[in-house]
Length: 389
Picture 1 (cartoon, helix red, strand yellow):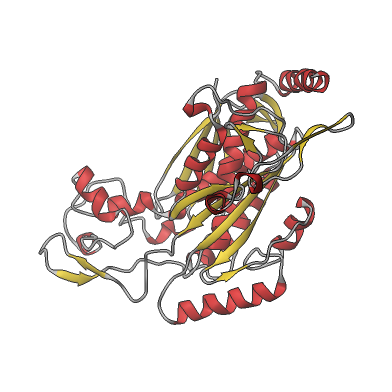
Picture 2 (spheres, one colour; picture 1 turned 135 degrees about the vertical axis):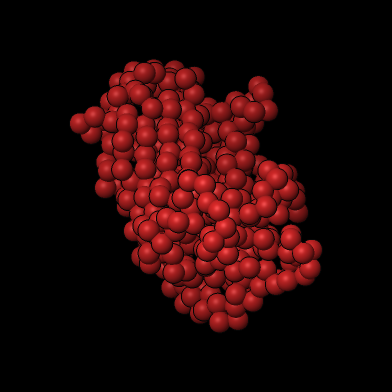
C-alpha cells in the first residue's frame, strides 16, 4: 500500500486532523520530536500575532500503541487554541442572521482563494473558503512530515533546510556539513548561516512591516543519505523530482520549485551543468559535483537531494489592495485578516516536511514491507546488490 495522508479542519475551527495511511508497524514514534517540529514552524522573524496564541502540539489518537506504530492508519490532531474566540462564528449548527451575519466575508482579498473558491463552490460567505485555504493547514502537514522524518531517520536519512533569500537580500552560498547547517540555522530567527545576512534580513522585514507590506523569498531543503534509485524513469508520475516539485508548489504561497541549480542551468553550457561519474571500491559510484540536486532521470543518484522553493509575499496586507464587493459589485479595499509580514523562515520548515514525506513515500515504494524489520531486510539486500554492480 502506498504511503498517503489527508488533512481536515479550518483555521479557526476546533482542530486540524490528519490521517496517515501506509506506515509500517514497529516504527518507534518520538512524540516530543513531532512537537519540536511543530514549534519550529511557529518561529521566525516576521510572524504575526497568531503565533503568540497557538502553541501547537500534536496528539496521536490512532495507529500507535506503546510508542510504536501498529500498521494501522495513524491519526493526529493539532488543536486550535484560538477556537474559543470563534465558537459561535465557526459552529457547525445552523444560524439565522444576528451578529454572525456581520462576520460574513463578502470582500475577496487579492492573491487568496476567496473569490475563486466562492465562485467554484457557489458560496456567498467567503469565510467558508478562507478558513480552509489558510496556511494554518500546514501545521497538520508538518505533523505528518515529522512522522515521515522519523521513518527516514530509522534508515540514516537526514533532513535540513535554510533560507536562501528574503526579498532583495540573498544569503551567501555555504558548503557546511548538514549537521552543522541544521544547528546554526536553528539558532537564527531567519534560518540563515551568515550573521551579517541575518541582521540585514531582520531589519528588512521590520521595514516592510512598518510600511504595511509583506515580503517573500527562497528556501532550500537538503536530504542526505538517500539510496540510489528512489523514483523511476519509466513513467512521468513515478519521477520523484517531479513529485517533490508538485508537493512544494502545493504549499500555500509557493509559486516555483527548482532542483539543484535549477533555472541557472538555462544560461550554462552542458559541460557546466552535468555531474561527472566517479567510482572507487570504497564508495562505489559517486558524482564529482551535485549540480542536478541528487537526481538523474527522475531517480535519486545517491547525492544530496537539494530542492529550492519560491514563496511569494503573503497577500494579506495592512495597506489593502483594491477588490470588489461580491454583494454590491462596488470597489472596496480588501478585507484584512490577521497575517504575517514575512513567513519565509516558517515556510522553510514546512517545505522540509512536505519534501520529507515524498521521499519517505518513494522509499517505502522501493523497499516496502509491513514492518520496519522487513523494510530493513529489503534495503540491506538492495544495497548489497548495488555494491556488487
